[in-house]
Length: 275
Image (cartoon, rainbow, N blue to C red):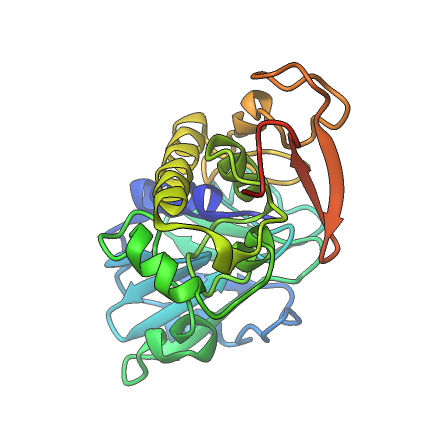
């Protein structure tokens, strides 16, 4: 699943190529997603300027003259900027948003993502799935003190708590495992048992891991490429994710793999202590 770095890289790539351009139409080949895409998207968008794209968690909010697109890549979605005349659509290329000689092409084999339109009278931040999101990891509001207070009432293991998105957004399975390793915190530790001091290490580790992934172009497991068609290389430098049975880079003991809430977790039981 695309996580914060992949979504941010997508945002930057789209803005670089078509930001400030006027939309010349859209081609909708499929409308059936987690939320239905508008069949009349071309009519809604034609002639409008793409003014900005904001990322909130894993959601993208595209601001046009008279409304917004809200999109989510789901489990397998990719958005690339292509020359629509030179690049024929292939299977699962569901939507093209046209900007003259370029198009933003939405590809989603599993269709767990979505792309919807909101009129300018509706604030996209009021959508229930966006309104409930936690702090952005690079915001001033994401501090150890605030995280400590927010986690006080949950005994969920810290990795499961982080993956809910209620406390910090965009830190999915890969980056959660890596951040907990960097902070020397066991993924099994009850969230409300972590001291402010340990959470300071975790906040710093999350920012460090996400920054590195942004520099590496995100993570490519199966489907993700950037808006310019480039793969990410973060997983090549991962220290625990996908490394079950391999020696820990710090102590040499084998990395363990467990399942938490149906998600694979990788960690070093020696370096990452519960206390």
